Length: 470
Image (cartoon, rainbow, N blue to C red):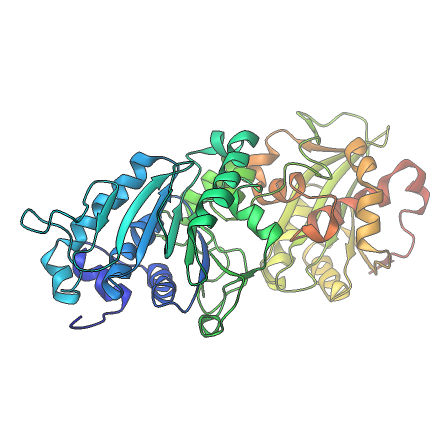
């Protein structure tokens, strides 16, 4: 080996057309750590059409064999045809002049090479060494093959396969009875997926083994027996990190899949978007509300009260959730408008005040254990015709949400089209799980519970208890 390039430099050399975005640079740096043995078990989740397979299943195997021609690399996918396609691409890279300039010791059988060396679309051996690359489809056989490095790329073809319990079970069975039996103490595993389902292979591994989120570069220097998980969200929603320093709301690849395009996809199917594009699938079983919320076309004529309930964000990762609603003579609660955002308080004060004015709301109650009084004063100044009060919530959040869930479903109605109008709210409510600690955000169920606590028929007379009006 004449030189040992970084993985990013290697990729640019053998694929001169490759244009690497900042997230690609980070992705390739992590893949290089995997190639050099700093990481033994790595999971990468990324939205569709963002270049994950180019890095993991085409460029990486060639790079691995350049660093160590004795390595046995296997690439698996949902079909043998796709896996073979990756294999042929790897072989073309190894045959190139650019590759030979970096790794002259790694060559494949050509016409004049010894006949004992194998080279097909599914398997190729490095001449004069013990290494090579083989490809296999999900549920395919690997009998007699040892594997030093396994790359599992998209083991589910589409949502239909991932939603099939039989396919998921067969995939897990194949992983445990075929993939794992071909590996030894020093073997490495890379799983790179677009998430389709909470109970896919990655979900099963997360339930059974230790999986740590990969957020800082220092983690690459710390050996672990568990998995490291790098998740690239299409629209940044988690806190910024060293590896993904984007601000919230920024697209992963704005030039190719911009924020406005992604927002339109989220409106079409918020739950699927959270799974495929954000890497946050929700369990299908054990949902608290699911998709059972009632909807309405027009408000009834017998509206007796218009109100608002606002829960300001306690931390930087929380959402401000503000519901404007109307109550009819039967006590049914009709949500009329919502502010659900993680924007800073100077922005949300204006948003909530404007919503109160636009919905002709006369009374607003601000719940917060962190700055609620200051927020209430600002809203009162911006919406002087609204009676604004604030109060401290003393009840246990988990107990309140769980015990009021049936009442929420019975009393609350959302306007038709709320799935498209407030996609994040829709996703967070309809995927909220009964197991409290399994949920990432509690803000929407907490605020909706607050509305019901104030407006339920048996609590109407006490709805202003504890509220201090400005």
